[in-house]
Length: 307
Image (cartoon, rainbow, N blue to C red; front, side, top):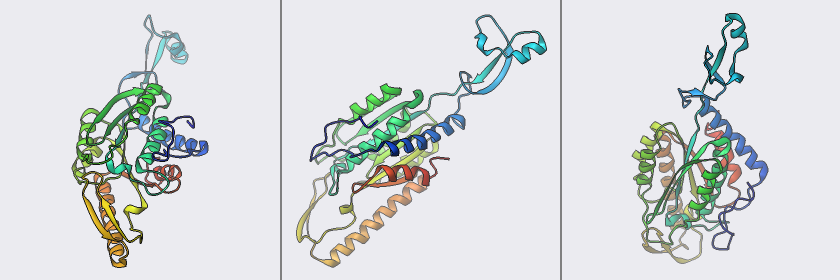
């Protein structure tokens, strides 16, 4: 896993940073348990095939695998019988990645999109183990890329190709609501959906997210940057909305302005968190400053993703 990389890190695009093997193994166990619970629980196949749970014992017919003969029943009835097991179907995980211009913002160690890239790599690596499938939907307001689910290594390689699509610099307004609705249409039922976004811009995603959570197990990973929550005291500067290009000149030397900005930013993020909870998704918040991988793994545990 440590050798996975989408591109060579640069100053402008530093990438997700170190991904220690020990933490990845813990993440592997965390998501692995969740995958196991999904396969063995509500989303188990009703068909017969390879599996671990006994469904029935029936008489042997020519062509049956002799390794499935139940010798105890055969000895009692004097007629060859074979075991049939419940088939455990492949679990499909969908990664929904926000690549809108606001994801290029980053004033700490990396951009928000770099953290999103790391979350996708870590979760994708684990989600494709044991032959499970991964589908990817990435959107930026200009282009959309939907990669149908593929199992194992093929699914992971498709993710790496999708991540090469970098967010546009500005002027593209992406619709998170439309992205969620499209994935809901194509994903079927009973999937694990990992939604990675900064949840900035129009709040058109609340109803689609509610509908998505009605059919799937959803993890909403929100990525924040410290400067989105508070202004530094650096005098006059221009604030720019990367998705609309709108500019606003402010005097950050005003303590009252900085305090009002911080309060408004906190209230707005609380509203976003409340909307995610109302929809029924599990909510994890990551930052562009410091380590994001350990909080991601811890968030899966704290939010009940691992049972």
